[in-house]
Amino acid sequence: MPLAMNRDVFITCAVTGSGDTAGKSPHVPRSPKEIAESAIEAAKAGAAVVHCHVRDPETGAPSRRNDLYREVTERIRDAEVDVVLNLTAGMGGDMTFSNVEQPLPLNPAGTDMVGATERVSHVAECLPEICTLDCGTMNFSLGDYVMTNTPSMLRAMGRMMTDLGVRPEIEAFDTGHLWFAKQLVEEGVIENPVLIQLCMGIPWGAPDDLNTYMAMVNNVPANWTFSAFSIGRNAMAYPAAAVLAGGNVRVGLEDNLYVAKGQLATNAQLVDKAVTIIESMGARVIGPAEVREKLKLTKRAPRS
Image (cartoon, rainbow, N blue to C red; front, side, top):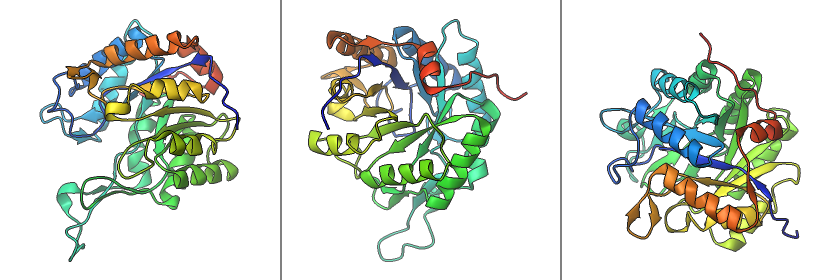
């Protein structure tokens, strides 16, 4: 497939994530106020989309509490800057086995498995324009932990998102996830226009070398919209790779804590650097209104 560079690029800022990064940088936001303020600053820097998790305000641990999501989304919606809201729906699929000799019962300290309705309940309450759908099961670099998303679970969650009028952003961590995403579209679980995020370099999914990346890109249907990112030291190289391959850009403290070697970043600084890279390539950074038009998104108030 010949490369077709994207000339009209949108940036997603992944604001805080659910990893153990809150103790590694003072810039990783924890409370709903901090998350919302960081998202707003990222939007001012040029992010058209903000992708938000929530954390326990006291400990920084990842959370699924609907009241925290509600506060984050209300604060962002009340801000003077426009931005597309994208909430995670990846929480509640966490399974940790006890040990290699006696895997069952599961280790409760690292297990959080709930049903499809509960996993999407904050989406139904807050009604963001986009929410993520992690399109498969995957080993992470955490010993006995498995991110667990069965085909039945994904079909159920995808239908709920579509019925709510919220655009799923498929997150593909490996080629098989992309394969199943096509199946969901074929079955009508996910409707056009299809949005997918290629999540590269996350152990133990697809590595972020260019051969593997292009294998993923070449399997994205031509009429889908894709973004791509990597983590850690390659995070700030991937905006260029994404744009060159015809995609859009994701940066943020969920994926990478540094704007340069040894220099801890804010979300706004990461977005600002991504804007510089994109514009230096001769492309244009588009805003939230154009993203809504492109992806047929509906901006709504939350349910009362």
